[in-house]
Image 1 (cartoon, rainbow, N blue to C red):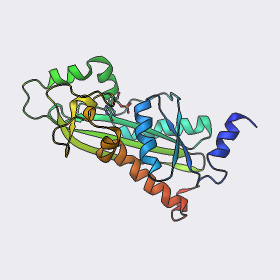
Image 2 (cartoon, rainbow, N blue to C red):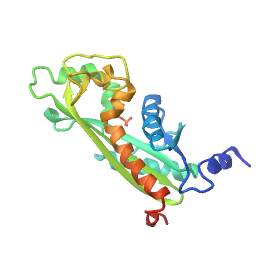
Image 3 (cartoon, protein in one colour):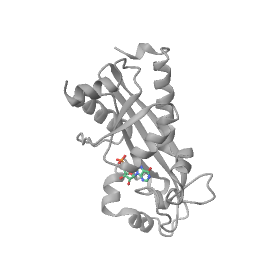
Image 4 (cartoon, rainbow, N blue to C red):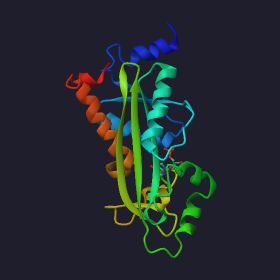
Length: 213
Ligand code: IMP
């Protein structure tokens, strides 16, 4: 039996109701956040370091969906792909689906510069979580959190734009100043993942079997 066959078996001899799901990412922070949220639902998560080619699209849902389909086809495993972005009101939603490129080019400092002298600092983080398995049609779940872009870079935790995003309800602290547990209480990713987990749990309990081919 090949290692992949073993993985398939672990993913659930009984899959689609298996406990183990593969989270496709190279980002350990994303993975840790996801692992903690899904464990609340008794779902075990393994990190799968694949890089399915990412399509360019204005919709993070379409990006996540396409990558999940490709990753599941390639591996034969039940996978989750998540795509996220920072949508800034005063910039018409920029950088949105282009957040990764913007982070690599102008970074947090560049965003603060773009907003210099701007009174409206409202913004939203959005996440799309796509689930796909060989036995199941691809499904997408969305989550978001509103907040404001801070005036300075603050905090060492997390990744990406965390040190410049102050979520609502945390008295002006940035995601970078929160623990993973605190971030997971309100984050875009945790909200999308909880929607996924509720759906997945209902499948495992056999009440939504229609979703399967
Ligand atoms: P990705 O394409 O889902 O990896 O996200 C695009 C970019 O958005 C990342 O490179 C990060 O800079 C940023 N991003 C996404 N999610 C988060 C988050 O939870 N915190 C901070 N930055 C994030």
